[in-house]
Image (cartoon, rainbow, N blue to C red; front, side, top):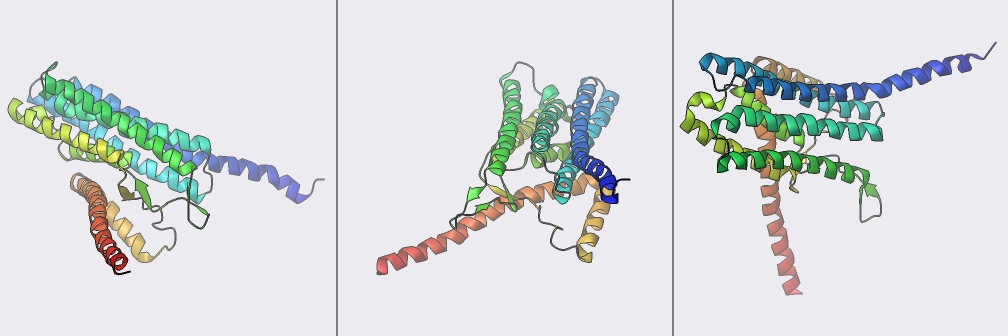
Length: 297
């Protein structure tokens, strides 16, 4: 008869393998939401161009596509956090997560913005329409580059002056692609009726504004601006206040998702931009003091 520890080992190995699959399940759900968002946007585009009733049908599909991207943001947050909590981070999991993000937060928002906004509002073949195609493509390319740069930086930690390796877990370099795609989805979720509903002239103006937003998001993703990662939130302490805050935030999103999601993403982006501005003004006095000390020596 085998000793007890030898009998239990195969069960533990099987359990360990099952734990490794948990983050991948959420990554697969992320890809599924991205695929659904693209298909729903294509289906909604079939109704655009008809009467008001057809536009209402189109808005239903576009709203569902935006919601799918919102759910994908949640799945994307959970798969990484679960992998870190269970210490089941793998190389293939990191690469799969990046591929999922390209589909869900790169391709799907670009298609969704085109269908909801400038696809039907701008005359096909015009200069503005071609520019819209270009900006949508650049959004996708910038998002893919942002993910590739993130993977390289994560695999090559920077060397500190003391000679130790360090990975910056508190901030992201460049706007995260889930936030960029989430902003486009939040805007459409806030007002799912296609821009063509407001008439050709107003739709043209709104389309130009949407194109500007897509261009700005593309630049922010490939910029060197730092945005908070919130990876350390809830890891050091699990106070009751943190739990109550998360529960309250979840309830607000459930009740007022159209407003709360849009405000949260705008606040996150503005926080990163304002932090950079404040950092610049804080460095200037320090540089001035150093210059004065050097002149006095």
